Amino acid sequence: GAAAVRRWAERDAGRVAIHDAAALPGGRLLVALGELGVRVLARDGRVLAHLDQPATELVIADAGTTALGLIRRDRFLRVARLDLLARRAAPWIVAECDGGARSFDGDTWITVRGGEVLAIDATAAGWRALWGVDTEQPIRGVDRDGAHLAVVTAAEVWFHDRLVLRRRRDLVRAAADDDGVRVHRIRARPATGDWAVLRSQPGRDRIDLAVVVGDRAWLVGPGAPLGFELGGDLAAVARVGPDGVQVDVVDLGAAGARPTAAVALDGAAAVSLRFSAGGLTIADDRGRLLVLDPRSGAVRADVRLQA
Image (cartoon, rainbow, N blue to C red; front, top):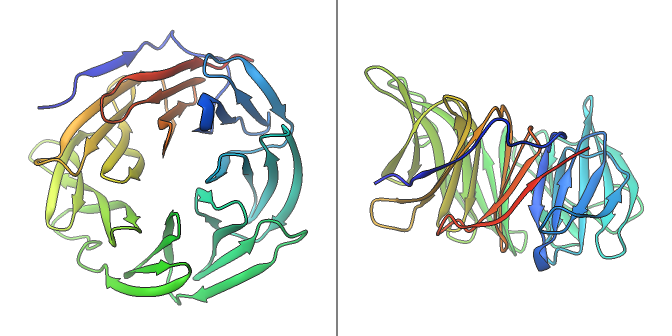
């Protein structure tokens, strides 16, 4: 059956919109606040450091000791380096870049520009590519898991191991838009060589969202999609709910895809999701920051960001 929905009331909110967030080792939290910069928080919400670099997206190093802060400036991406141990930050580069992976190994960041995938030296003074490939196709996204990389193009998924192409798998059938089915997002699982599709399933009186892996599909529920993340066998889907945003977590490895957690954030219109070793981080535009154990639904952190 469905997981019981835990609800955060509209009045139970902070005062600063959170654009992106991550749980760091040791229980610390990192939040991107747009033009207000980046903050490092303790698990109880105390501000440990303020990093004065604008960011709406975070790219977290695997060790959790450094990060990149990104913000869009027209067709350019402004990137800052964040030293989370020394609690210092500095601007790095403004590059013509469409985006990239949400994590990196601390040295090399996988980015996308047009149909190209570029491995950028994150330690260099300037924007320097160490490796690159032109897929000659529009790129839907890149997903990284340690040494494994998956590039999702319009027609294929390219799986790499340590930047060596191991195989290309046809995506046309999974991404087909037929019989009213609409594909919203495709997220790859680089280590297992497959992917999950978030798509709309038209019914008689409503549009339902479903997560599809191979020939198996699991119904999530109705509502326009706002976010979709994978963490191993776990999937998190954010959708428009009746009173704000609802986030549903599903264990794709269980028989019948067992729902493990459901969160309703009343009054919210935007949300960010991120799986890490610390759990599932959920942050919204009403200043709420949650860290859940994605398998049990237990709340590990529950913070309201004030001005």
